[in-house]
Image: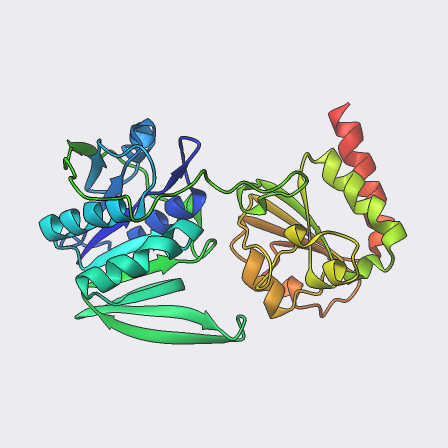
Length: 318
């Protein structure tokens, strides 16, 4: 079976969700008959891609700015040339823009926002969450199929390293792109954040009890140079803005460390952070669902633990 993974970049860096996808596919396509190719458009990430255990990295050299029509033509050309069984994307806003168009153009089914994949005899078994993460649906898709994976579906730190070659190619596209004219990339307004790129997140739940107590987690977050996140109740109470919310109705994150303070860990929240490399939870309820997925758990009063933890961190830094 052959996979082609589209590598999306931002600020000359590979999106973490793309390295997660490579890691996940490496675990599935691991026989001598299997192969994994990548397709990328930003030459600045070539060196990094060549350190991963894949077959060939394909660099298209004549694209400088995102336009869905050009991206579709690139993928159509490369799919025709390589005949992959699985075409893989990260489930980003950009993917949601043009992957459905690609699916319609090539008449290849598109299964989006998946969390797992298993190789079958004549296709793949894909797992997709439904009803805000309450139900996992298995979808058997025959090859070829287009798939996008949810951020955090696989662990980026489990990617297999190796050496791979890069083939450069210019497609000399001659298409009319005037029907779609992308504007400058959307940027969050001042004060808003993209938690999906944070390496450390300190997240707070309803266990904080009152808005007056929020300074405890803010001080801890600052001591760790971390971003501040929250569960939905904290946002509903108006203690933090919506862009800080993690979960099925907020952001999906996969930091190196996710510190959950006073968060029970309902499935709606777990959907947004279960892909974190390390999860630490502080909760006074020993039966809180968050402990089922936590790597480290502290059962106790956050009002006693958090100030002491902040003090220890500050003392260690001084």
